[in-house]
Image (cartoon, rainbow over all chains, first blue to last red; front, side, top):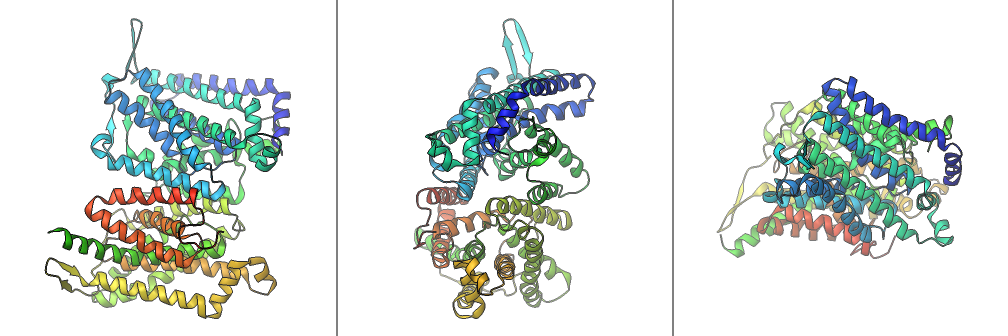
Length: 328
Length: 293
């Protein structure tokens, strides 16, 4: 199905789509009152990670660029916020803003170089840049605490607004802030898809040559897509540092570049709800497997292979192709 | 120790790792050259070679030399068999489509690595070197086994070189590399050549893993460094160019050794990964590739 068709259908059923998306946010809001504590924390984490997946999907799903190095954008946000709050005395709000800003800046710098390539070369260049970032974190271990990481102290995670102090460590605050960020990312991703810019992204995914022939500067649009993607990944990283208080080099490793790819492929690349669904399913799949096997990450490999072999559209993508053609 | 002996030690260490790296990277280069796919699981075949060697050497109560010889023989065969299965079950079904293959080999990486973790455990295991002698320099002693590793790797490199250039099988591989459709039209069983090349590539990494295991220990996470360095070699040397890959292996192996000894191993890896990215962007044919792909 071409991008144009998807667009047209999304428009003709905007009402249903709005109900679905708002309904999901409402459902997530209500769930906090019934979930036991363990799943309450999990879901807050899943929503923050889903923001990372949504950011990744802007690049892979909409624009068709497969990055193997997105951990660098998540990690740069994580460290910008984490170090900003823990070392440079930023308050949590400006500390959080440092996350998306750092993600955006790194994405533009990386994009200026990496977007000269495409396809397999782009995958390897992003993989290598991200690995360079990971090694730099280890190299400056005195400052970043390397592999071991550091904890953002609870006292630093208090937000003073007016006369009120909001404690980010409180589970209810954490859940609702994660939900707010998730809602914002979901809305942005939907709005981008409906905008003229989003249509150019999809056009690039479907046929870059033709898009260029139609007079679009595809290079600039790809840079924009990467910048948006990096900003959102950085925001997810920043939120993670504040809400879950741990900052470590693992989040910059190859594994954390593979995760968003896996989440997005499982949920459905190029769909608005797929990234969240994929994150949710994989999180619990890994959680269950970790109780059964020492090498529980084998499910990551198995799911990746099953998806490429038999299920390339992912869950929401397959639903859309078969039955729910109005899904964005 | 003063600068001169220090440099000699760095160069010795660098040459040994260069030989092993050349062997590993040759496997990756062969797979990329003939099949046009990037095998992200290549480092795991290296790891499998090492882990299987450690397991085999410990299996029977044999003298170290015989146990090691057994491992050197059996371990690459097992690695090759695993690669054949992966090719048959995964890569062939994807018709070797480049982007899907990368994602699938990432999956394979996780499966192999995590299976080893589950079956073999998280501990690093060492294997006694089959021979134990030291070469005594005026400033330091150097393990004789390391020099034997370099020599063995050199012999294997030459054997592969000879096989590719002088045998009928090599001719068939080179024909497939040049134009797989035309090769098929001339009756070359391209599918079988692909399966064979994938297994051979994995076996080269597996042999390198066996050779390294008495020097470094066998561990389920040991595949990442050889993977990244092999990428560096293949890309800097020029994708699909075997001669370029050999030259790059020595440049990277030696500089890795020297930088690791004088500065830090992490810095050496940072420079290697950065070099790969920049070469791929600004000189995609590689530095010694000759012809552009």
